[in-house]
Image 1 (cartoon, rainbow, N blue to C red):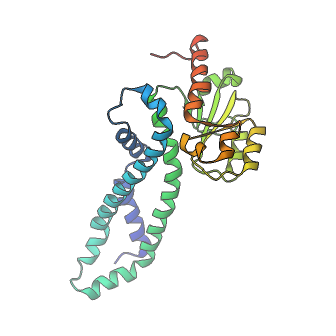
Image 2: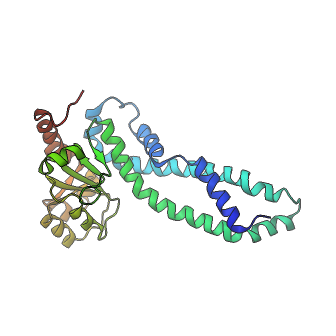
Length: 260
């Protein structure tokens, strides 16, 4: 019988082989949420806040379905042959007991992986919707830090860093928002997208002092009075109307970008 560590490795190998990437899951979730509006970019932009939240839910549900399928494949390929070496309950109990450490570590890894995927999924959802709306960007470029998005491009940042938008995505913040100060300190503006509903007032004030605009879905902004009154808390729709779209017109006029 394989050692527990060997079983864990084999389970992880089969699981990884069968689980889709986060990008694929995000794309499937976006497709479900925009069904019937695939070519209506105006609708997507006008409903971006609701889509961000809805797609998050769809992405998690899609991941759960894919996770279950990947686990079943892992059981069939790795565990089932172990059980088939005997045909009684005592043998089955022995297989489970001897491989308990491997199963425990495997499931712990799944739990930890879900947390990482949840944060990454938010970034991938934004990325997928940006692409759908034909907004140019460079993702995960190393400048002074590594922001999630530089709009319109890292090349334009190197030519004229004061004319770019630094856009970073963090599903929840805590103290991590301070990282953005080093993720492109010379940009035209810092925009931090989140779905965090529990940001302290002092952090909102500190973000304002650091020239960071907090971008949230419309629903989240409306449920807190301090979000509504804070000068630097804007909705996704505000971001497009007052910041990104004017910048797009400027970039096009200066030939920094070309749109088909």
